[in-house]
Length: 272
Image (cartoon, rainbow, N blue to C red; front, side, top):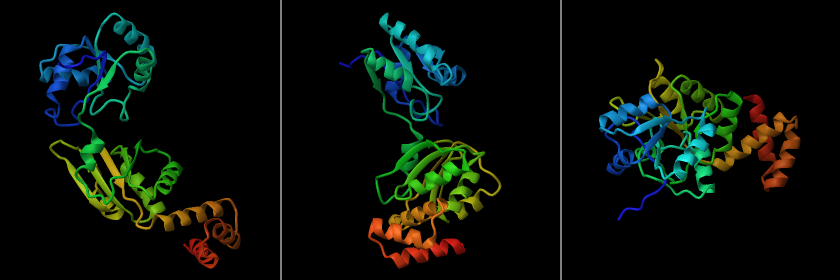
């Protein structure tokens, strides 16, 4: 016997239309209506699987105003499914507002296993550690990209970006982290799927004529993250106006490091 829920979070294919589970199809057919980002996009999927369920738009611009409607329908015994245009809802897609309200109101919520660009990507690239940090779409701001690259130097950093911005983003990261190792995936599960792994300079050279498709990227952690972290702290103190000798005293005292070595690193940053 299969348990029934009030509200279903249903993943949909990220590219290949066949990447959907039998249970997902069954749920989408059985609920009273489907909440979706773009009714036109979802309708193509529904038509392919002969699903006649009514679609109602639910996106980041109308999330809050839809909440009362959903609650009212659920109180009347209706069943609802939430989908995004592609992948798993609430992974860089709308859903957080309604899920919070449903749980607070005592309705039962479940999520089906299914497609996700993050797990699809990570399952086909080499990693020495299972640990990674996923930040969703990386910022458009140069200063925030720099800050993020520095902040997560000790972790594999996974992020989304648009094809229009990714090459600029990689150049900014390169100026901060040097010619670091990255993995870049585009058009996952589609006909022109491509995974490239290498130094940032190699990736930039490969896509020198431009890049198309949905992008997911991983910036590999630093080989010696502790060393990098110290360099990051030196740069921060320099930005605050501290002199090389002052920096060497501060960091050597705080982290039990060799003062002369810190001083040399600080001078090297001046020269570079």
